[in-house]
Length: 401
Image (cartoon, rainbow, N blue to C red; front, side, top):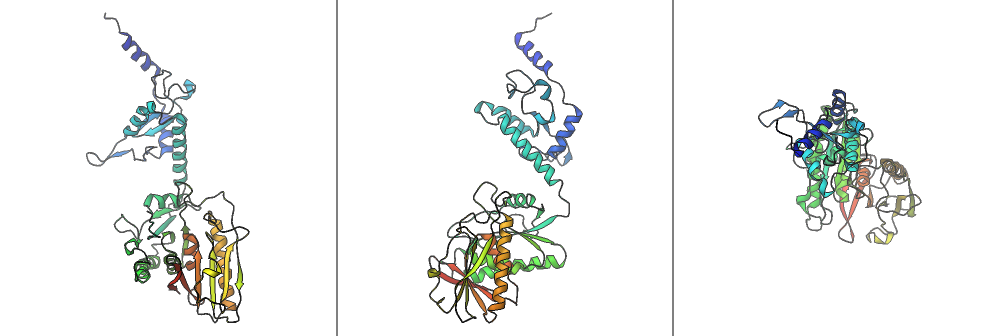
């Protein structure tokens, strides 16, 4: 009989160390992963390569290699042999990602710590999403424009992530996005109001057209909740909020620069209260101006010369702190602003009933701007004449209500 070579003996030794994953562990892994690759989220229980059919394409990959052999991927990590075939040490992957994590070891990528973190995040996400009641849907409304040359994308995945991890969690429904490719209200093609004299007139027409579709959906009971994402000039955001109204539940989302989860409200930050005060008094009750300082400071002397000593000027601002970019990081802080704003508007309705409009100057984040329109009571409260800084001086942009 021909003697075995050392290479064949090593291979046989390696095979002897391997054993099949138990059915219980396999079941746990597939359930926790939701049947999807835990890196790319590809669904692994079907195939469409040769026509659609049910087919298990999943591969169970060890985080710490199954074998104690140093050639086993991440096998030299200190983990007891009897724990290496447990569900906590396994990832459900597609063939491509399985090959990727094992071939990238030499470059220092996909360490044990990173793979464990990715596994935990994905399994926590699956558990969270599968616990949301099936009827918790929300209609996504997106308004995107240019702000002084800047523009952002508000993508479907970003909206999905924000609504799923909000409380209460909801499934994003893009009912207004007919072609499943763009945003519902796109005003980027209008450029900037400094360059386009018809900017705000056209913006109102575009918003009105989409809002009409939302109202029809509400009347047909097809829409029961709205989730609003906006990135545009402040007057456009205020107008959007007013046109949306408050007939159904609405959640406002706001973009942050803090981390990769741009549209997520934070949960652990302190709640910021707000207050208002009269900073200039006049006996002419029909003349009212309102400065809202949340992310920055608009000073009295910056207002147009037409807002003179005959005006009653109110200031709405955060309590006990100076306005800054991260004043509103939690949905509770937004609620605090909205409560203070509604109290002020009720005061103006009572004490300045003869005023047919309020001159509004905003230094505020997008969600606050939308809320200023959303919380304005149609027909009973004065109109808002919203100003825009173009480029340094304030100019009346559009009237709301």
